[in-house]
Image (cartoon, rainbow, N blue to C red; front, side, top):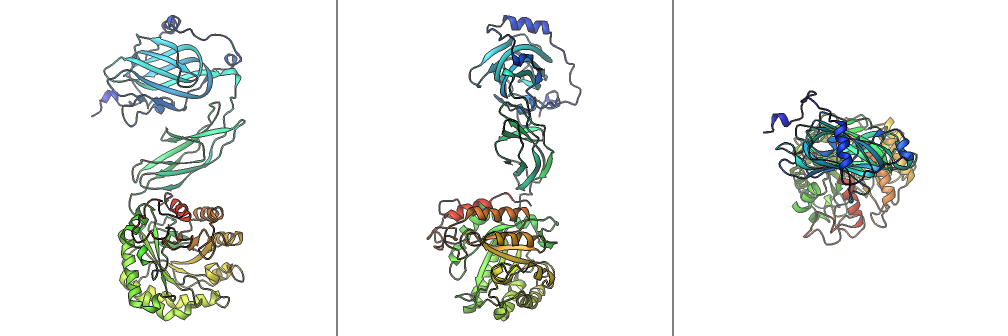
Length: 584
């Protein structure tokens, strides 16, 4: 177990002794390398503490909780500690710019260095000594030095104890060389979590400004720097499940000036379970989809192609990949009614859907049962079949918490108004509710589930004024980014503030599911859906020849399904976005 005296103590530590400045000066004067002395514009400037919060590295650490950044954090209750029992060891600070260094203050823990050097470097490669001792006695060494460089280090050659080297603080004082930039960037704004998993937290923040230019951001977890990035986001990995972590961010510029810390954000990692295990029974809360605990969530996943054509693409290996490698939350099971689908063999297709629900359930995914009506476009044409099908599905799976029902894929035709669709839904939904009172039910909207935008115009207000009867009801929106531009994007954005919306099908291509991808517009939709927590499902998880199918032709019989080697361009793109950390 750890030595009691070697753990971070409370505020009271052993008595500190201020090292003799006379002795330090004598040692400095007798050091072999001449000190760099003289006046300059920089030396006339006020001396500043220039090491606080700067990036620090070391030759080793004793273990977790003793990282080098803890020696420059301004906290005398945290410390850097090297591996025990070996020499030499070092700790290095990147000052972020060239400075004239005039003072170094080493605040030693019990484990001190009896022989060490202070060295400075312009590039972290060629080092010049500015102080050396072989008779140090620990406590506080407050040293007057003189040297110019960007990097500075304590290089220990002999330990004063049987342990290692350990510093509560390594403070460096100086001035910018040549009277350089001394203006710090503005504080990063709106630090927030954009997603979590059991072992990671994704962060984003608003960019800082600077009189010259921001060169990067330092990310801190609980006061310890964990990353330096150039963008305005970072994913912190290797965390513990169901644990809270607190983060701050600082901006820095080329001269090494650093902003004050951002407002802290505390984030809890996920429990480590599957999407269905973590979220349980879903329900509609206001205009959002919520989990069993009432938290607003977004599901992301894939739709099958028609199971009359591509059932071979839904096997153990492919669904293992979808749940594991793709990290999908939901599988949409698309069962066509016509076009060689359900009406040709109701028993066979119902059994296929039963089986796919079980396969999704076994992998912890949600299963969206899609009554994939297309032609004719009036859902009432298939009402009798829908009653039979959904009665059996709901009876078999009503104890599951991971099933959702989509009762009309894409109503279409100008004669199929919202009134027609609503009449159908109000007849079918009680059939489901008789057996499954809780599952979310998705209702298609006019003109190919476009809220009417593909027809006479946006029908959001009409739907809102005349909603479907019942609870846990959501309304669907479908788009294909290469065909559906600003009018569709704006309609979805507005509707999401007025109605519970679910994008149960979209593609990055033309509305035919083929043609060139429009990833730029697709990303606009993705960003909107993330902002408003609109769940989405992409079309489609098959090896169809069209560009909308994610796998290259011939993949489904033998795979592989994990990774990107057999993915089309759209498959690589959507897999990457499904794999984005969930905010559960």
